[in-house]
Length: 451
Image 1 (tube, helix red, strand yellow):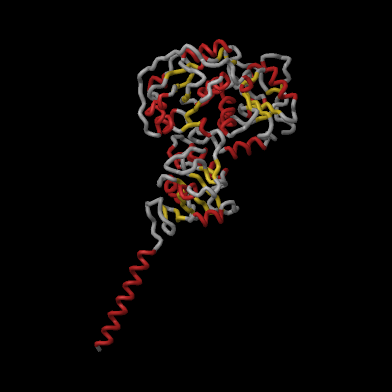
Image 2: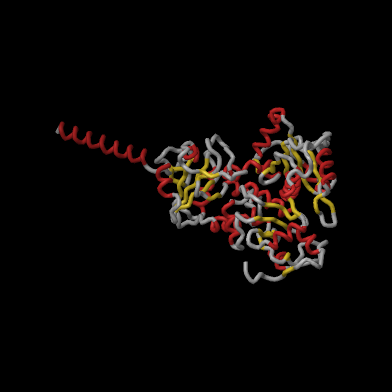
């Protein structure tokens, strides 16, 4: 009887041990995105570096960078050893889930579809801050996605043998944190300026709140009607002096409308300012990052000399004669139209002060500016931009000159092309406004017979 009791006790001990072991090893959900291999992350299971290496590039797998756009482009953020993204990854920033837009859900659905982030695939979501991957995983799980995996890119970036990609000139587009650090450090004593750019002597948006130390630039300071081309070299130099800008001044531009800031940025690069930066995503990126704003109206602080002859980079902006040369060189050069489809085919001029409709004969449609932006107005994935161009036989080895109506939309695309590292690129300043004003310039309307 005693032996039976011993056996029964031993059996109960073993049974209890099995229960405890099973409960501890069960695949439960955890809030720790930095989980070690074998744990799970929110709605996603952790995946090892070796497993990721084995599956990246397969048709039934998609790797998604969930960090902010700047990290994908090339910035080293959140302690990552190397900037940029895992080679072969696409992007879907968790920040996009917080964008205020009445059509957000519809837009997010389209983005997921366009990027191949579909429920039938195995989806690896990676971040570096312990939050982004979980947020996107939970969102996708709520939509019925099941095959979700989480990964911390710090491990990948720490191994120099594993491929990562950055845009050659990613530093032209800066995150809000970079501007905040610039201001806090006073650029280590080197000259710098921060400007809010918009049209008008008085900017209501500037007065409501702006980045500390920022000065307002009215776009009328750099362009004038009726064509709205850039001003003369002498006038532009005076503009720079009035605003305290020299060729060696680190110049940061932003606005609620990134096109206005891009317009001035392109002109400054044309003039010869060596270090021109744009806040990626515009003023909302600063506000969403939680940084302080001020309402003090900061005055312009003039300087006496610009430091070089204007323009120091004359080929960055071209005029009508060069635009005609580009159109004539059909094999190696393309005049790329950055207007809406309706403007391109001549359904509308797009402007109340432009009467002509159509496009310069031989120009190709490069898509409207909104097709170059993510839902939070940051720069779109460069691979997707290149794919858009391929539809129209626009390739990155050609000489590309971008134009729109008066230079704003095309200026932003030119900067993105510059960020991507493209060579032999320019802005056709006069654009459709100038081209359509002369009846001698050949014009096409309707859908083109071939691309």
